[in-house]
Structure formats: C-alpha cells, structure tokens
Image: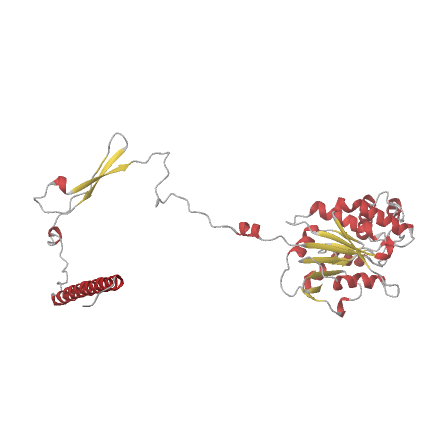
Length: 373
C-alpha cells in the first residue's frame, strides 16, 4: 500500500483541473469553428438575388398622362401659396395632385433675390488696389558740390522739387562734398558746413562726405563715388550743378519710370569726364540716349553774333527739364540773349532767396544783371 503525501495530492488535483479546462477550451473552439464553416457553406449555396429592373410609376407609363396647372394664390398677409403640379390619372383627387408651398412676397425694403438682371455686377479689382500692396520705390537726386556756392544752387533745386513734386514716395536729395571741408581752415567752407546743418531738416537733405586724396582731381573723385559706392536706391539721377529746374514733373517721371528700352546705356568713355546727367541703378551707372539726352541741356553760351543764335539756344532748351548755367555769366556785360539773361536772373534770385544770410554768395547784386540787359 502506497501512502500519498499532501503535496502529491495537491499536485494531482491541480494537474487534473488544468487538463480539464484545457480540454473544455479546445472543445469550445472546435464547436465555434464548425458553426462558422456551416454558415459559410450555406451562404455559398444560396442563389444570387436577381438584379433590380427599373420600372416607371403608373402615371409615367402612359403618354396620355395629364399635368395639373401651376397656380399661385396670394394672401392678405403678404404670404402666397404656390401649387406645384403632380402628374396623375383622371380619377385622382385634385387636392392630392398638388403641394402648396408658402411664398413670401418681396417688398421695397427687401434685398432682391439672386439671379435678378437689375443687380449690378461686382466690379473687378482695380490695378490701383494692387499697387497699394507694392513697396514704394527708393528714389534720389544726387549732386556733387565742387565749391561752397554750389550749395545754393542745390538748395534752390530742393525748394522747387519739394514744392511741386507729385511722386508717391518723396525722393532723397543727396549732396556729395569733399571731406576736406571739415578740416580746412577756409571760412567759406566752414560757413557752408554750418549752413548745411541749418537747412538739412528744412529740405530733408542727405549729406555724404567723400574722402579726397590730394594728388587726385577733386571732381573726378566726387564722380567716382557714384560708381564705387553701393547706393541703397532703386533709381537715382545725378545732375550736374549749377543748374535751374524748369519742369519738375518731367524730371520726376524720368526718375520714377525706366521708360522704353534703349533710352539708357551703360556708362562708357563717350560720356566724358564731366557728364550732365547719369542714372544710378543697382546694376550700375547709365548714361542717357535718344530723347533722354534732351532732359538736361547746357544753356551757357558765348555772346551771340546774330539773332539765329538766340533761336538755337531756345530750341535746344525747349524740351529740357533742367538747364545748366555758368556762374561766370552772372553780371557779365554785353550779353544780348534775352532768354538766357532771364534764366540767369531767375536763377540768381532763387539761390539768393535760399541762401540769404549764409555769406556763401559773392556775386554782383541783381541790379547788375538788370543793367547788363
């Protein structure tokens, strides 16, 4: 006889329970599998359902069907009833052949319904609204001051341009001057620097001193700054001074718009060492061609020998926006060109008005000009 310990009995019972539940789990899985297989077999054995055949309603199967008319009945409260026709046979009741939908009548205060011919079309977006989104151009006029008296001519230009310009963005007026003015002992150059500080805010001027080497020509170094420096402007016009502004609108238009192709050409030796007009762009310097050469003209002439010379001077400056003058002709006796003398008088009066009290002008008074006429 074999005696079983308590541990052996517990192991036997645990093993029996595990085996029993494992068998039951396998049996349940087998039953579910068989049910699924039988369901799939029955589904495969069933015949396919016939495809549906479209059929028309009875009222549309005969060509002799009748359609009830549409009627709209108004009511005193502003709401009408609209009758929508429904086709049917003759023995169909009239109240079953139509559906009444309330219709709200329009009055003068209501917004017209969509689709009306009297509704104005929405205007397309104009080009001006697109232009407002664009960034304004950075424009400038640039002058080179060779001597202190040139400052008065530039101030006269600034006064005329600021008072008559119609550009969307106000162009800068840049003055190039030798840096030696700041260290020179000349009282005239010191007076020029002092007066430049006084009028800078009045005309919104930009000053740019140029480093000058003693062995080089001052004018060449000032003009060389136009090419060597990277100017932060989209377009800029260099104008030789002294000169008188005759047509601000024409000059501003040439500065703002590039114009047709071929009006400006890259700067070359043909432009000379003292050009009257240059265009500064991010791509470099440009000299004028064709009609742009008439934008700036020189009006300084020697004493004419006939009346034809007077006519030639006026014709050459008729289309000009900026006329170059010679300060040496101010108060010069013997000038018979009335048109040129009028320009000189106008120029002298204008620059004296902007430089009054500065001490920069050392020219004959206006009475001498009138006497020379």
